[in-house]
Length: 121
Image 1 (cartoon, rainbow, N blue to C red):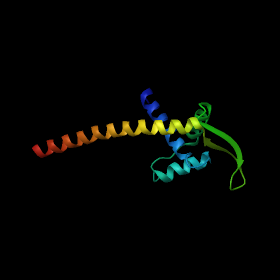
Image 2 (cartoon, rainbow, N blue to C red; image 1 turned 180 degrees about the vertical axis):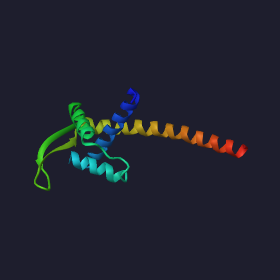
Image 3 (cartoon, rainbow, N blue to C red; image 1 turned 90 degrees about the vertical axis):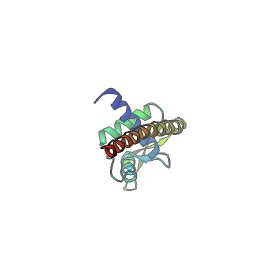
Image 4 (cartoon, one colour; image 1 turned 60 degrees about the vertical axis):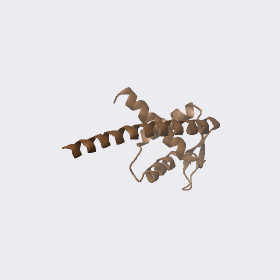
């Protein structure tokens, strides 16, 4: 995978995790389940990918983690957004939306060009 692809994927994953934690603190499995549910099972995160991202976000001080007991009486690390994390979520959501909108414009333009070519044939 090219470096730019990896950066885009990592940035998107970070944004998804921040969004998953916006309503309330959550453990890693809860974050993963939320993303699966919201994306209607289109996005499934591997544990290694998820926990690497959670630790990276914690090191960047966008998340703060603490050990707690789950509803199943198991010990798990719960993550919550820090003030910096909330700021990053707002900023990065706006940037990603602008980027996605630009990409969709390009895709629509290409689709329109293909349609026009097909009509001309």
